[in-house]
Image 1: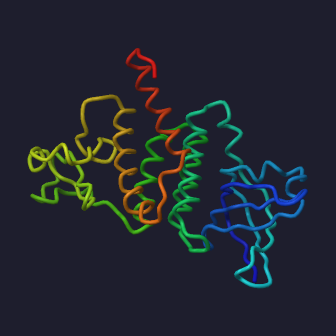
Image 2: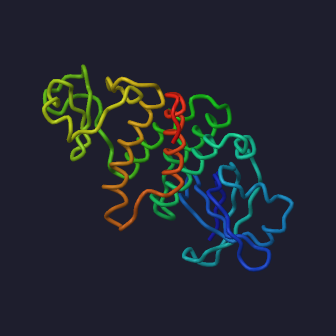
Length: 250
């Protein structure tokens, strides 16, 4: 059994004295793991950093085996993020969600392509926070829990969409949902809603609260899991930006 595919490194851990078990998201083979012999001692250790785009070749005698990986280095993104805790936190949150939510050895090319686009935004520092929110929305769709934010679930209007039902994942207009607003989730401007008064960062936080609600309830809670700490840390960092902008501390 063998394959060669484009891949993004999700993480690596030591195995034995000098080897690594490397976790990848590949385009055609899905989330995969394999053993890299001598990887911990290699001059190419940077190729095993999370967020590195590589070409991976996997070989095993049987498909169910862990298998051996050969990694050909490609584009490394993490080095450019080390001096920016927020961008680095965004990458860590993304990688942690992939590890937790995508089944192993199940193809998800849309998730892979979205991850590569997000890495490009992170590399350029170009709207990466909004790109990450869009990636989480796409991840929900990939997992089978897509949201319908195109029209009001009650009236069918596409105007003044203000909230999202936490039960159905459908948008609700301001007029139709006003009486139930305390039970609904805010539909931020970043996702086509009218949002609420506040900065662009606060709008993103509303979007991340929306995706968090569905990730937790639909994808994670049924398996006894919760959102990964890396994602919580990223949201906390965004929250501190809001506090700083208001002249307070957190």
